[in-house]
Length: 306
Image (cartoon, rainbow, N blue to C red; front, side, top):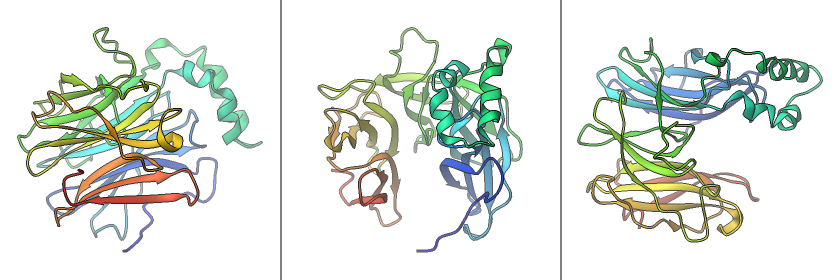
């Protein structure tokens, strides 16, 4: 296995990059998006970066800044739609979220960067409300990521965004996030689909919470369409009542996402999940561990995640 560095900042204030997603086009060009220019896991400075590689990942372009709003642009996901069209997903917390977590932000900063973060936190109270554009969003590109259309607010969020189904529709398994839709339960997990490349979205169903767990336990889902048309969903689970207090539940749909089976726990220590179908037919589930030995892990299934 080869390892390549996509982007690294070794000096300066903003060295943290996180939560990347990768896709590939019909010419073999790789595209990676992430949240960069950060002080740490939680800060007010995040921007959405895009990197490109035309040599299989051995070298990458400098980062293109897609989003740099007044808020923290987080959790960039990217989905290639074909013909140079691609979709970016990301989300922003409202500024009040950061004001309430000032201590967390201070813990990531140092004596040099802390006054910078404090300055923005103090200034948020004077920011015009039209710049407090929080929620989950998609942006579309029609030219291989060189330019991007205006942001479209969507009801749900997930770190890697939606997937494209074989029928051409987009399928989005995500967590409700400041949607403004009173018909949706705040923080619940829903399945949505789009027939127009992400411009509009229709709800398919809600995912049933496991017994004894709720929306505070279930986060950051991902989905994949299997060769037989089954949609397999995987959900990050955490907190009391979850094995190791940090694990993964899976559920599946055989009707195009209109309904899902009751989520069942894999029992492993680690999350959040990402699903990928290997060319051999094997299903690969990647996740990270927060217990020793720490690091990234994979699980492999040859029976569609059963």
